[in-house]
Image 1 (cartoon, chains in turn green, brown, purple):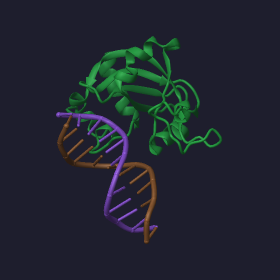
Image 2 (image 1 turned 30 degrees about the vertical axis):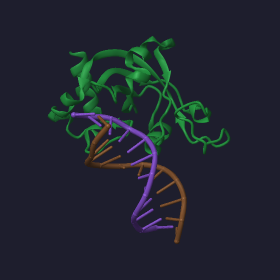
Image 3 (image 1 turned 90 degrees about the horizontal axis):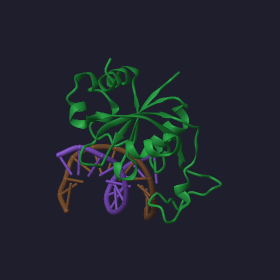
Image 4 (image 1 turned 135 degrees about the horizontal axis):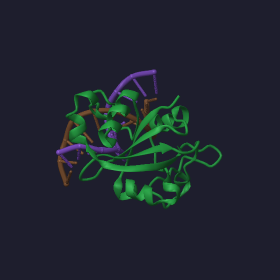
Length: 155
DNA sequence: GCCAACGTTGGC
DNA sequence: GCCAACGTTGGC
């Protein structure tokens, strides 16, 4: 059964435009360093799942496009790279701590900004909007997915 | 740059 | 296993 996710990316690192410009519009989702987010990727995601592509840590945070999960899991190579900000000295290739999946961008949308999300009663209980929520990957209910994609795609 | 909120680490 | 100290996230 298809599930839905919201995945945060800093547009300075990889914006929806960057993802769309990549080969096959597909990017490896590197840099997840939180166990709960990792476990979502490892245990719950399936190829084909829907993704809300969210821009974070930027002047206008919000949902910027639609994507889909495009691969299984594999070790995130940045954890082994001492030059990477995501380097994890406690991880080894024998027992990698951190995983990634490929994400394929499908469409850039208008920006559905954080203030607008917060002001939308239908979305009030999104995990993203919970007080203190910082997870970079959060599940999205089918109802929220339908509502948001309808807002963004019309029809 | 600030800071609230949360996660991780490590001594005990 | 507790919990204080520290680090990180991310909106503002």
